[in-house]
Length: 143
Image 1 (tube, rainbow, N blue to C red):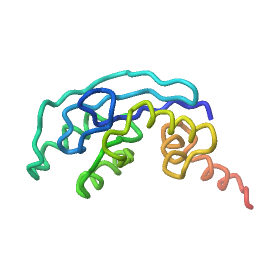
Image 2: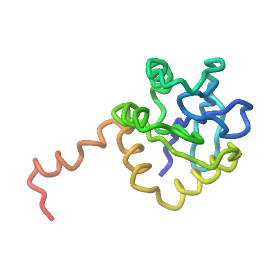
Image 3: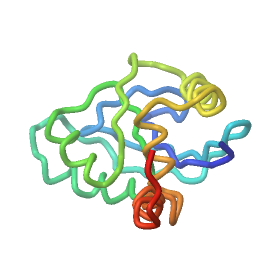
């Protein structure tokens, strides 16, 4: 698997996952491959409170288009339900998890065999691959 994926991290210091998704001040977006990772963008929102106002979620979800996942220290059910139709997997981690550690863990998973969500995300971002089984079936292939 030699694919590169875009992943967002909810962070205030660009070094640790230390933000709740809904109140995240910033997202650091990385392009991550099996052996390399690079920061491609930082999206800042400023200080936001945990006020239950879900209108702010739409802007965050829009900003994460193209990402397969967002790592955060916490996330509400409503946000999860809004992210999934966009193909963005929320990943809840221990508060203060170093970005480098989360990236390294994801790279290891990419090398050793991705979990179901990661395999699905990679599959969905590879044009023409998502419908390959339908095409095989149409050609008369059977198991």
